[in-house]
Image (cartoon, chains in turn yellow, cyan):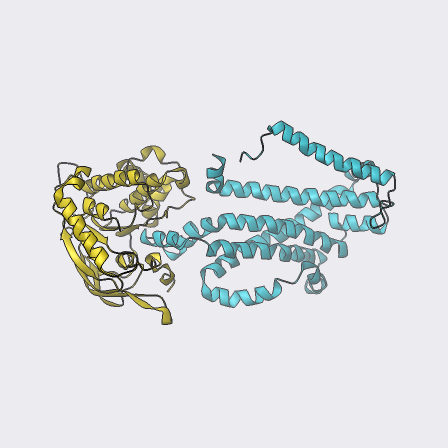
Length: 285
Length: 264
């Protein structure tokens, strides 16, 4: 974990938090006759502090699985636990970052980041101070008073990450967070994420359809099948950390990439339409 | 925003010139007692006469009472409509049960024009003051209500999901996400409601009233002070425009994030 400083966790005495267990999880989306199984029989185990990428064809249910981990979607069958407690609903210990901006447009950057502490009753002075610390970590301390729409796409995603990290979550769930960014900004954000993760150690589940991104970031890549989604392959990514972009020209990287492409291309013919992100229509239920 | 290449001053000059040209056309038509068949200016007083009438109205002892009683009625009716419209709109937009119970009667009442309410309002309220305030309330209520519902329903569900993941309770979501998210739409509803409440007020005052700009306008017609009619009309226009402008200003101050990107 290198000699770099880590933010102190409130509870160091327990076993390190952030373990995810899924046992034969199935998730149904839609209502009535239109209901269908988006995820079938997914079992996985993710260790505390691990960075796992989920890849799979469009519409395979990888975002749905992430939504279930966040607590926005209920599981139909099976068991989904974080640190042995079943996931029953959204919670600040399981923070989620989406692809498209979900910052509050009416709040300044600082107040967006201070929102989580505010919801949990932190005093104004304390929550603003914590927000400032986290913003400094993501390199945005000079932009605290801007509104989100005055920032570039990459900066907005950094604020999103800061807004989740300020809650010291056990899990950081990321749903194609860099998918809307241009190629250069995306690479920069990947490096930034790894840098942040080395300082604020938390379990990260990262959904992407970009194989290079998955291989660059992950300790482990889980490949999902065509709908109904299940995990068809697990790849351990051996590259040492800290990683640089140069690993992408190594033969090992090429072999892993080839393996992923084969898996993604042979299973299932046509891409399915995207699922409703997070099955939003289920939220009211 | 760079729609016109003209400088600010020249654009204002053009606007002033446009109003001057209208006044000149009106003055000419009235002094020549122009009769165009379909429209006739025979009995229409020219702007110069209207101007004099306005000055003498301004000096009269009743002018203040007329303006103040109209302003008070609009302020009261509008304020009640704003509170009721926003509260009902938030409830209807957020809860399916509230929508099912509250919306059907409101939808039934909505198409009824405020003028049609006047006879019933007179019967419902013992004081004519209250019946006039009620008419302005009815006029303002529906635009505010509908825009609030629209605003609430259009809040991005992902913002709500994010707030939930950050630990927000149901009431915190209403306060911190739904209300500010719907605010630009609510401000629009309030501005439209302000306009409708003015024209409903004037109608109400024409029928039952002793003071008020609407009453003054109608009284001038019955006693054939034609220049005063136009003074009344212009006053209504100015008051309505002024109150809407104040409201938009207040709205812009309350929703600074809404305009910031465009003015950069």
